[in-house]
Figure (cartoon, helix red, strand yellow):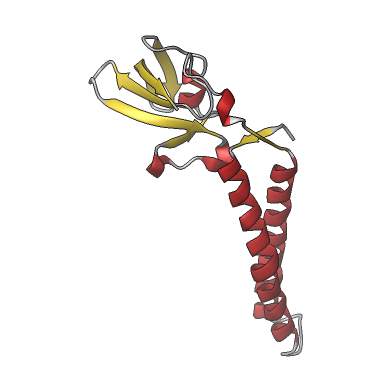
Length: 156
């Protein structure tokens, strides 16, 4: 698996999630399995099957998160500049067709949250903006065509 760059906040969030899944969700599912097992015949026990399936999904999620954590590299936020677009920059862009301005913060995939204006650097928009400077005009291929934008501002 590739190196996964995270902010300290994003890294701590992953650790919290793994801790919650291991200390609260795992015991709860184990309890459901035990209760279903106590009801007798497992061959026709839908509760048991559902609990075992939930357990498998949970364990896969825990494993995926632990792999992400083990491959994580924390980003030194003091080394981030605004000379050109890079991870953790807040980039203000202007759509050249309708003059609409939008601002996005570029983050790792696991920290992306469009409602908060955080987009992953590995999305088409993120990739299209990386390395660009204020004043650059960029054509970004998106699922519904090509987005033509101007880089208006790069901030921390």
